[in-house]
Amino acid sequence: MRRAIRPTRTGVTSCLCLAVLLSGCGAGQDPAPGLSDFQAPPQRVVVIGPSTAETMIWLGLGSALVGVSDFCSDPHAASLPRVGGQLDPNLELIAALDPDLVMVQGSLPTVHAWCTDRGVAFRPWKTQSVAAWREEVRGIAALFRIEQQADLKLQEFDAELDELRPPGTSRLRTLIVVSRKEEQIAGLLVAGGGSFLNELLHLAGGINVYADQARDYFDLSEEALLEVRPEVVLELGGEGDDELRTALWQRDFPTVPAAANRRVHGLRQPWVFLPGPRMLDSVRLMRARLHTP
Image 1: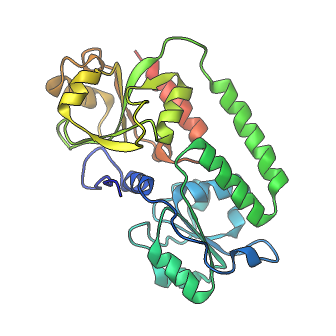
Image 2: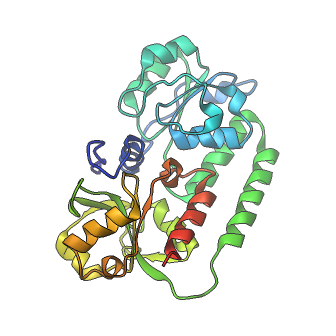
């Protein structure tokens, strides 16, 4: 398993910690008995995974949700019970919600075992690419018998995505920083070519300095940072405005072009790191930051 982002590190949210944790966890589990036995669409669904909950709501299935993770930020789920997260699922509360289906992101052995013992259908997803998200959409649609509706939604998504594709212009070499230490540019965790963030950056008109790195997220040494010399730095999560971020980069790495040219930008919105329907908004946000002088 790859190292997760620690919530105690500044510049990062707990939800982002879980998103990166998932990148190292394959589903690795067969669905619990009963998933293929639904005679009708599931009626009471608990979802531990903010992106999957948002996808459910996007597909018009919000009324089937009875519980979501602590890190679900979709306003349409604001009133739903919170059942913990990837690291601390609240099995007692899940039991009280009496679900007929539990869906999760990544590998949750305790939840899987709980579902198996009680005959509750269980469906894990590992959604770390745009293509994998489309597969998740179609999988959920099949469970709820809304394949045609899902196809139309995906067509709309793809049409918007095509409109966002940049013209064949030069691309700014960009470093995506997922996490770092609080008051210094050190302990960097960055996005590689295997992450969906790499895909979104390309769609926004940038190029990941580590696009050829097959890993999704990995630690970056100071020496490597000086070698790649990014033109733009995008930092996910965290506190502080761009002026503060830039000042830290200029203090610690003044020769890096992104620091020298004041092109260090924060992406603090919680949905930026979710591989779900708001990936379109993430592309728009990245594009806006890439074109900010």
